[in-house]
Image (cartoon, each protein chain N blue to C red):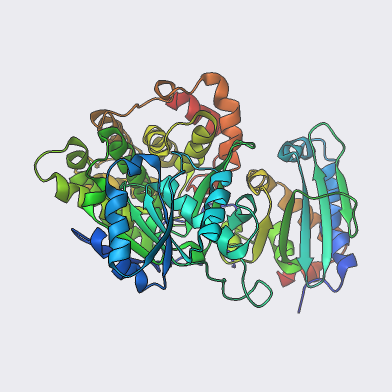
Length: 139
Length: 408
């Protein structure tokens, strides 16, 4: 059984995490060094989050339909995304096993991976604040 | 895919791993006088009309004629020869090679050359079989698969490789690295269908190799073996290959470069050593060397030779289990490896620098034409290289900047 019951739940938690990161005084400038637009395409439930990370410009996060044209597309189960933001997915193993698939200049995203460590507790905090102990424990 | 703690924490370099996979599907034949059997052997892999992929340098050695005779002598047809591969091949060359295969009616590819030639043939074969452009092939495990992309990867045309350098190991790997000149990056492409079906290792192919190229490619092989042994993506399977590759490189590299008595044996053994050393489980040496090649044209093996000692010191300072792995390697080289792990790693780093000097290669980036002003772009490239994630010690921008400064 998938962790999230529908796309709205994905947007409520993972989408909100991206929205917070996009305006974070400390983290946003670091992530914008990627200088790209990334689209996360999730399965089970079908959902999509597009994130604009461009230096010198405001961040933009679109949950669902978007007019942004992604340069990098990452495809995975929403469960994998959830577990990633809890710090429980080894990216290289997930890429090796095909659990995360990427399209486009992946180098721009790979260099962000070491930066995400401080984001894990924030995602956990979002779930705790929403009273979603079930999601915290399910992973 | 369950890991304890944060997934960004380094994987322990000991114990039973949560996960790894190992594959080596290329049929390798090794020996003397094998070039005349090229067609006979490639026929067994499904080839009928062969596009021979090579470069202008190999054209001048007489090897092309020998392989051509081997192809036709084995009952295969030579569809054509594509000899436009440069030292550092690019996406446009791969696209032209795929087009040459289509126009000539080829049904298979035979690469005769070094890493650039073999990687060109791999990517061209993928474009030939699945369409699109070379640029669009980028990525790990992204080649077309049946069952909506979740099943078995679709085959490419039969591919055979005859390496003319002992270094890259591309003849038995499922990876290719190709330059994208406009973006000044090196594209990394890896998936199971890129394993060549056949590799032919014959010391005849490295007989005319210039000493400097033999030295640089040999150091590339050595770097594969060292990084493969300490990578976060280590495995007992690769450990066995890496350690024996290092024994063979230890015993044969300098003899193969210097020429003289026993030279043919040394060259043959270096072909095997490079073949055993290759792995996708690499680390920061390769992450640093890829942008140095893309921005400043430094040959890959030379860049690896320069970076390797510095990365060894950096990694060894990151933890005892990492340093102990370097101690294992030092023991193979009969180095003084008592005392703390960092001292054993220092002995190994110093030994490698001495080896690089004896081989006549530069030991500093500045000697290879890299200016200090280039460091910021190199750091950005290294941070975005997939092998950074496989390094046993976490590496940040400042770390890379410092490593490049030390190597300068």
